[in-house]
Image 1 (cartoon, rainbow, N blue to C red):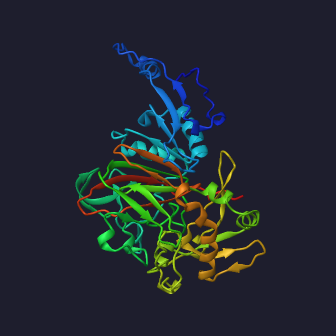
Image 2: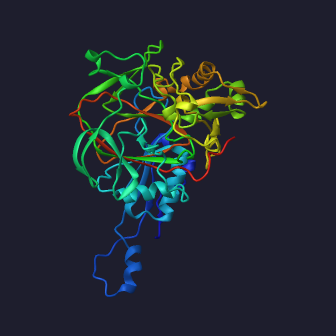
Image 3: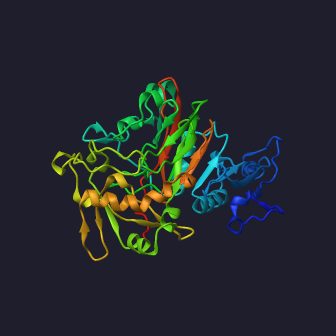
Length: 417
């Protein structure tokens, strides 16, 4: 595939994407003339319809301090060239979120293949759906696509048929099932919460996926909701119904004091075995960032069988493979211990949660949150090694939300500082 530079600067690393300048790559024109023989097939592929791949900043709300996010238009994700993928990869690791609009026709296979190109050695879905014969609480409402099981269907409401699945009942996470203190039912139409800030990861046996792709098939329309932090800060966030909210791990790290930056660069977190089962009936703060320490976690003897060699101890800070910048990446609800530089270990859960919360909380204030306003056909690709995210919203059973998610357990652990 040949490309020509336009008169717009094509090196996006030299552009502050927040200025809304575009980057363009021009393909050669397509011929529609009949081809006389098989030896012309390659020539036909090289002379496809003229398209221009453009990159621009995501729109932000007034007062936003969000410094990440890009939209790429006019690229065929079903037939992505190596050069195009190279550009997308570079943009992702600079901008952390990439949105592709109008992808209604994208196949599950192409979604999987795009996800896998970020980690060719990966092939297993990022979580184990079944442990000892029972669905885990984390993914009990996810349904694997029959012909592409690395891609999962999620959402809300009854769907008669989709991607080989029939008569599926989906359930959008409700904060009432995870938070200790809940919004009263008479206010749920107008107000909602961040459900749980997290990294997409099993955090036991399987390494955290490098990227996640989310495809919006059906999106509930109409009302917006106010996200209440309800943590004493008085902070709120206006958001579209059932948004997905993102914050930057890089900003989270950069907001720390020099002393805290040194602490996180030299400390690691140990995740519990089967951590999403281990947390048991532990309940969350109202902002979805940490758990209360009330003794509701399961003891090791009550957990499904596990191999201690598969327990994960990961750095608190992960390095971006392109920019080499550092991101504070801690999945707070799953942390069991903190390992310090001097070899000592903090294993008091209340203290651990106090420490992690203090490090993370400043970066989830409203001005740092990007809440994506979903449209049907949106494909969102995000850097799972550089972001925290959460589902948001309170949906009624007849408000249908149908999404496809793909992430693959990484072939290697995240790179530390």
